Image 1 (cartoon, rainbow, N blue to C red):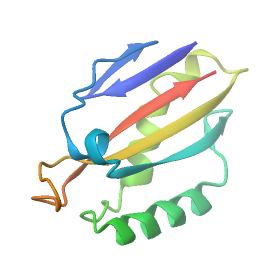
Image 2 (image 1 turned 180 degrees about the vertical axis):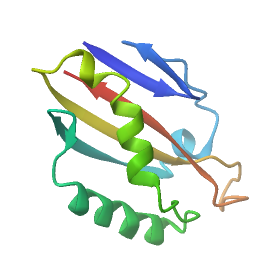
Image 3 (image 1 turned 120 degrees about the horizontal axis):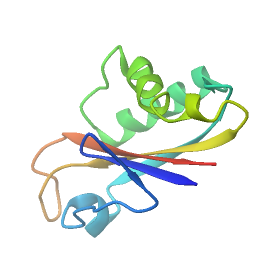
Image 4 (image 1 turned 45 degrees about the vertical axis):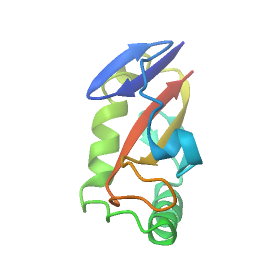
Length: 116
């Protein structure tokens, strides 16, 4: 089973994604892959540290203090339905901006991919 969260909606298997932005045109983004077990984000502090370092390197606008809670809230919409399952959570961050050689803004967005 696989779920993809895009624009506030969970899709099963595939999701519509607008590829006309800097992330897809110029690889202006990154991803972090995490393990979810018993509805817990394993090694959460290490993942958050890597995410913060990469945000700084890419000059993305900072993430909010409740980012971890936001991620928990999203994957817990799916994982409690399958208590004995382990999941792979892929968090894909991308610059949600136009711009050719340089971005017009440092706003970012994300896509979540949760797979059994």
